Structure formats: structure tokens, C-alpha cells
Image 1: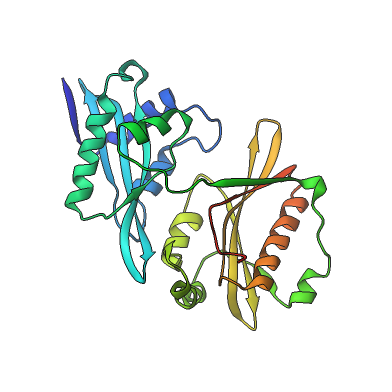
Image 2: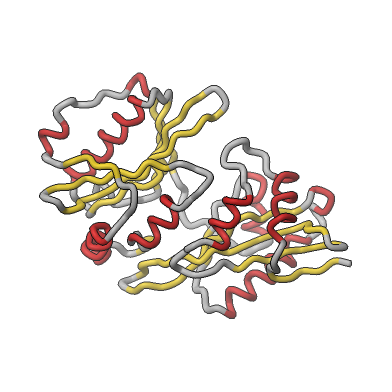
Length: 281
């Protein structure tokens, strides 16, 4: 019997079996540790909404919305990020995802979530637009560079007088930076210590590298870096870059030291997603 319902204890095992059926890319494969971190972890915005479809006690579909604290037009609100839209291959193209999404949207409305955004893959993109009612907001640009073409000015640290420091755990220094910067932002995920520690430090299945730019003991900016193997390419990726808009010296310092880090780790390529950021305006 087909049933569409909210999460109940034990669904994570069926979730992982479904994921193995439908997920194609070879990196960041989900596991039980990842599931507990993402769906049961210390997300400061709260617990996600998870909708499951089951048939005769077998999980055949899933769609979730993960709450996110946002700074939006001068106020802190809770929005959400949709994730893990999955349908068993034997049930695809039968309209099942619409019923699951409708249930999810109903629950979001009940909780007063004002907007939900997502990053659908190629296979799911048309579904989001034509069936689920999503709208294109921005075209996210991917920048990449061959590591052999990167040139770093060796005197960058002395010239700009910042200190490049490993961050093992975010503390009140990043909270102070966020409070100082947020008034200059129209829309942004709240980047305080509780979010950054959950999102990057606590994640059990992927290693991130966090660095801060300090001046006179104060945190002026930070960056989150990641290294992963993509077939034959060892790639470095800037996950997050943050400083006060217009702080060109700090922005340059973070970028160049991040690039140097990737060179030292012998990556072959470095990438960065950008979507209208005022980071260097």
C-alpha cells in the first residue's frame, strides 16, 4: 500500500538504500553519519521537514527541507533549503514526486517558512520548474583555474599585515564579525559560530579546512576550503569566503592564501562558485 508521510524513527536505513539506487555522482556519497549530521544534528535553525513515500514498508521516495537562518532585509528569519529529492527508478515518471512535494510544501506553510530554495541537478531541474513551482533566481557562475597558471605574490602576508590562522572551531570572534557585517547585506545565510560549526566543523564525512584573516587580534574574514578527487583530477574548491564588502585587502589576502594552500596540497585545479556576491565590489 502506498503511503506518503513525515519521517519516523528508522527511516534513515530506507533512505540510504534509496540513495544508493538513484545517486549517480561518485563524491560525497551519503552514509549514516552524514544523515544524522544533516537531519538530526545541531542545525541552529531547527529540525528539517522530511517527507517519505513508502510502498509495502519499502521507502520509494523522499524530499526534505532543511531550515536555514537568514538575514533578510534587516531581519533574521527562518527559510529553508530543499534537499535529497529521490524517487525509486521503478516509480519514476508516474507523478509520485508531485504528491511528495505537495506534502512538503504544506508542512512548510504550516511552519510559516517564507521561501525555500534548492540546487537541483540536471535531471531534476525541469521537475522543479514545471511541476514544483520553483523559479529561477540567479545563474550561478563557476570559475576555475589550472593550478599551474596560479601566480602568488610571496610578500602578500607582509604587505597586507594580516595573519593567516587555522580555525579549528568558530567562536565569538566570528560572531562579532557577523554582527559588524550583516548591516551591509540584503540577503545572506546567517554566518555566526553556531551555523559555521554545524555546517563545517561538525560534519563527520567530509573534511573542510577553515582559515581566518586576523589583524590586531580581530577576525577580519575567513574562508572554508575543500579538496576532493574527481576522477583523475585532484580539485581544490573555495566553499565560503567572507569579509566586509569592500574590504579589498582582506579579500585579496583570503583568496591568495587559499590558492597557496591548494598549490601546497598539489591540487591540479581550483574552483569557486559565485552568484552576484559583493565580496570584491
